Amino acid sequence: MNRDDAWALLCEYTQSQGLRKHGLAVEAAMRAYARHYGEDEEKWAIVGLLHDFDYEIHPTADKHPVEGAKILRERGYPEDIVYAVMCHADHLGLERKTLMDKAIYAVDELTGLITAVALVKPSKSLDEVDARSVRKKMKDKAFARSVNRDDIVKGAQDLGVDLDEHIALVIEAMKEIAGELGLRGTGG
Image (cartoon, rainbow, N blue to C red):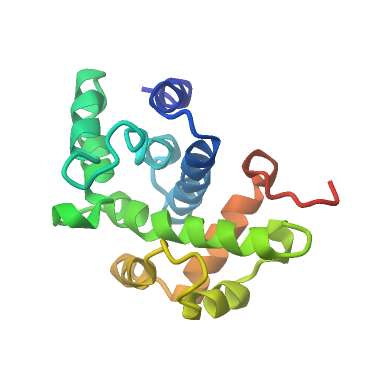
């Protein structure tokens, strides 16, 4: 189990560049939280990278991520990684037991909202995004309407972090890979 294998698995099942970039964004956020809590960065990163790896082949709530979990088990991924991937999906009603479980849920929707905020900035850069601008867009229900704001708030609460600090940490994590996300901006 390593990052290269996880990336290969993501690419095997995910053709969409947007969904791959989402995996990268969530991976970066999970790495940042693992560092923050002194946890296993590689393990947390793999959870972030793989949390939606099966979404293209199982896009419905009755299959995602349950069917993906079967694939992870077949490939020999440890049960704590499989469980974290499973419990990012609120519809399964699984208890989020560990910090890793709570973190994947907390960062998933937020990375999507941060990406959307960056894309409407004049430079299309994460450098122009801050917690205040994300909070402002959270209030606009028509903006990035597929992003569940309640999940973002609940995720921060369950993780025990202030919402603004949570948003800021995830923005900074995503800035570290802005080029890979296509969010470095139009200026370079």
